[in-house]
Image (cartoon, rainbow, N blue to C red):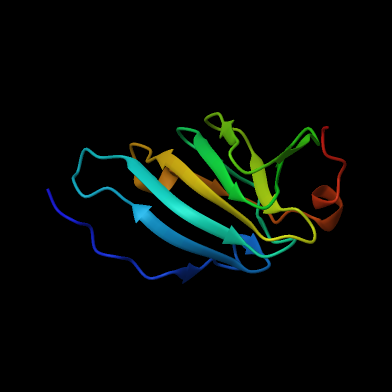
Length: 136
C-alpha cells in the first residue's frame, strides 16, 4: 500500500464550465482494471457545468453551500450539505452552485470501458435553464 501523491488544484476548463470552478482529484485509477475517480469540486456563486452525461452514472455528495442539479426535462433539484445525488448512466444533467453562495461537492464515478467515453460533454447551460425554478 502507499500514500498517493497530492495532485495540484486545477481550474476547470471554460469549454466545460461557466464561471469559476476548481477541481482537486482525490482518487484516480492506478491499475488497468480500476475504474473509480473521486474529486472535490468547488464552485463560485452561480458557476456551473455544461450539459453532460456519464457512461456509468455519477454520485455527487454536497459538503458546503447549496447545489443545483438540472435535467433535460427542466427539473431542477437543490441539494444541501450532507445530501448525495445520483445521476444514472446516460442521463443528461448539469450541476452548479446556487446564486449567491459557494458550493462544494465530491464527485464519484467509474470510467467507461473506453475512458474517453466516461463523460460526454455537450453544450453550455443557458442562463434561463440555470435560473429555472427548483423543486421544493
